[in-house]
Length: 365
Image (cartoon, rainbow, N blue to C red; front, side, top):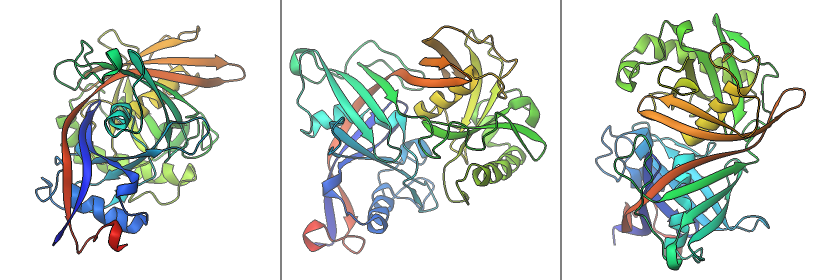
């Protein structure tokens, strides 16, 4: 045999999609694992023509699941962001959209047995240590994908997947404000560096000469903006204690503007080398936290709710996303939990194949 077959489920999770594997079916060594994922996705070509990736950062994501040895969790979720063209794999961040498919995938894989009309799956995000409760529709003990829930950025409607995130403050850097400041100035631009579910550098759109309402395509064509943004992101990464982040997708970047379609605040989110077509679930939690925190770059862009929990509606390039934030304000903003509703759907299953020159399989390891 010249190829190694690896079982997988291909799923849409939220507004992303990618292969979901059992961790035990993949190499334990991270260097070999990276080579396998690069080959499976087809990283190195703009269209991922020699793999199952979709030619965009939201379609080159990978979930790896296993039974958890954590007393609280049922399932461990290990995430990998595979680059489209650069043949790089980043294991530092997690992904909340792909997380939307973890509960259904765990049931499909036999890791979880459905219970009653709704099955609760306790998930540990291995990359960040976050704890998430996913509630999956299982009427009559059967996994259900059809439903009436609609999310911006995904066509049609599906069954809801309710996500509650806990333990996400300082998930990557160990601090809510990694620089210890509500605002920093980098290259003449005020930014807030915050770590909630995802480390994000946030700035006002107008400080880049932008409205904050541009389409993803308009932003992606603005090379001058991306060049300046990347310089700020690299410096912010150092100040946040993350070191040299030139080859890391974190910290992410977001720009903010006043809402204009009835939401709480408007944002554009970057992955970071192109514009997210919608909004990341993890990024949404950080942006919502920034919006609710006095003294950040969001000051003056919204009327902050004082009662908790608060619904923060983020306007993005394809619509809106709602984040229900449970918080306290005692000597500053403190996040207790964040809830979102997403959807997921199984698209395919079977085996993905990689050359044996990349990996000969478990039996030969």
